[in-house]
Image 1: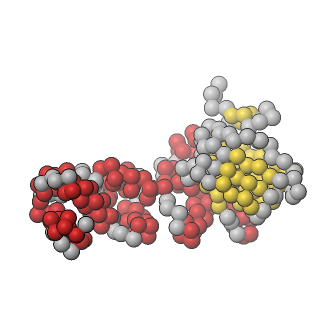
Image 2 (image 1 turned 120 degrees about the vertical axis):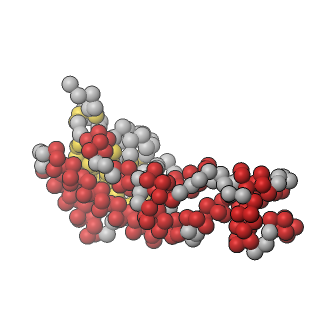
Image 3 (image 1 turned 135 degrees about the vertical axis):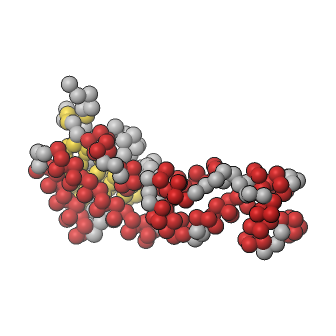
Amino acid sequence: MRSDRYDYGFGRRWTDSYIYRREGYSTSVIDYHEHDFYEINLILSGNVRVLLADRTEDFCEPRIILTRPHTPHYISCRSDKLYSRLYLLFSHSFLADTFPEWTQISGVFGRGGNILSPSAEQLKEIKALIEQVERTEKPLEKRLLITYLLSKLSDLDDAERTRTKRVPTYVLDALSYIEEHYAERVVSSELAAMLHIGRTALLTAFKRYTEFTFGEYLTHCRLQHAILMLQDGKTLEAIAQRCGFSDAGSLIRSFRRVYGTTPKKYLLQV
């Protein structure tokens, strides 16, 4: 007997994946909740409010709401307009365990959920894909269709990030890693592999969202920490060792390249 069975309200029990439609003037779930499966919601019509962990949005146009397991969320609607919604639910084991690049593509769900604004044509295509998943009984075909659907959603997400400057999750993770490990040897290819993203994609995103190259950002991070140590009276040799520079000479050269002066003269200017 399988243990990964899910209940999506009203006694509907399922394994692997499940598709459900709702139409009316109220929502089926009336609290801020979470669950242990992935959820893709096509909200086709209604005056809707979505509350995620990091934002809220009101809208009356079609939206796609994405939540990963254990993502708190709440979707409500006003009763003055017909609420129409198409859900696709699937378990982690059904897809992630058989898809090597899952970590990268699952970024479309965001850390605290995601809201996408499809065009009429994109909405039609995505709706058709979900209905195709619903029609097939073959698990492999379902996996391939859902994977293809996620790639389409990822393309839509990338386009929206470019327009709105929302930073991809892997870039935020890279920034956090550099902040924690700036004193160590940090190599872009190794960090990209750790984040399950291509090196070129990581370097391109770094330039787009930080306006620095990967190497420039790492140097700036190290220099910011070096300045704090300079102000505390640490020696250049000690600072170089603690901030990831090979020696005091390398630290001085970086200061001159970035700030146009030496560390000691820089202190006199601040």
